[in-house]
Length: 187
Image 1 (cartoon, rainbow, N blue to C red):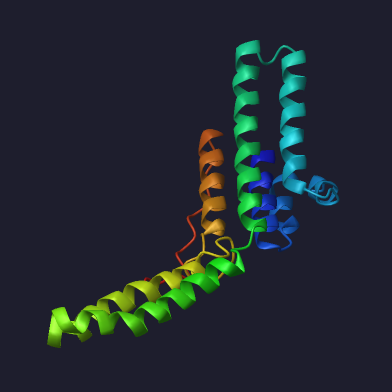
Image 2: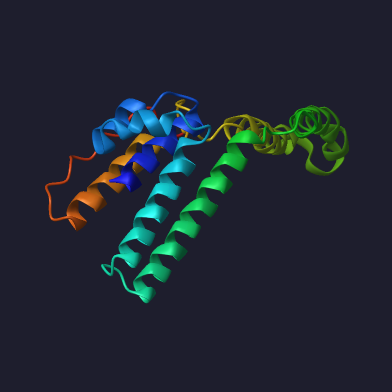
């Protein structure tokens, strides 16, 4: 169940929200102890590692099984670090500014160069080019915070629920229902 608490703590860190209540569902009062750490998700990975090591020492887990679990925990840690890096690295203002200004400059100056070759079709070509450039400009703003709760952000709640379903099925228990899709649109 530490793995499910890890999912919820990581979701909370990436969205900058309190996820102790969700983690408490799986690890009870231990969630409050884990939340006291600067990085609760990392604490959950360390707890899973200590648990696997204790099982190895107790003879419940052989060396190969321990190695596989250790590699999986290392992979989880790498994924967590990557997500935290993405969340903590804002899109540089210079990039946003460059895309924005380039879109306007191209849309203002390109018709002058196209008019002699495309004639009356210049507005059509410019509409396609402008749509592409301003779409890239809007896309850069949309991708700036992929872990938020706005439309088209990553569905972290749904991803946590998929993890819950997988763990419950692996334990032979009844999994929770899938969350309905919300807050997304195709633009």
